[in-house]
Image: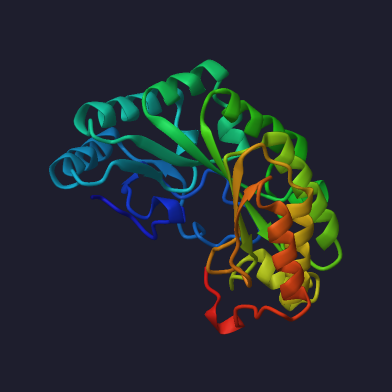
Length: 289
């Protein structure tokens, strides 16, 4: 495989064939993210992608999922992306699902019919980094879309039959807007009604604008108990028809996995116990990205 630089994939894609079809992120302006700062965005050549699919055909027969790297593979123009999916179907016929990161812009650039065609050729799930449903927070972190756009694009992907896994960031609004961010994020998640939500707790990365804001006193990171209270408010405000809400990433202080709405009351009660000190939180040194 022709991998360039650091490869990032969702935890649920740990056993997938990682096919790097783009370099970096088409947006790459988020203040909290340092993942792709050293990469200039580009779509890899057809020849390299074809060679990697051929490699997977020879060596990856036991893996039945493919994940398209890097940060926003859905941004690839429709015809080229469809060609890649067709090559996967032809040469890796045992693959059951293809996944990719997406953002509001890349979903917007595809018509509903094009999204349906991509789904028909194996694209099964999109991973959308929403981070927040609070417009001021989205503006501050330079996400490139407001909450209305996030909701509309999430609904568009769902209407095309694509599964959606949305990432949100606990702590991203700082202490001042913590609860507003939590409530508004729950509102937007409810409007989209995704199959999966993954909540991560913010960890400041040296070299990013948000880290610099924190060092200069312009951004105040909520302490552990306030992050947990924020997560509680977010879950309370989130109404899903039958979605999994995960907060079991290595960055989280209290690992949680709840199917909503069935497990909401029990999950909120568990968080309350932790806030009261009856359940211990993960020590800071054990947290990781």
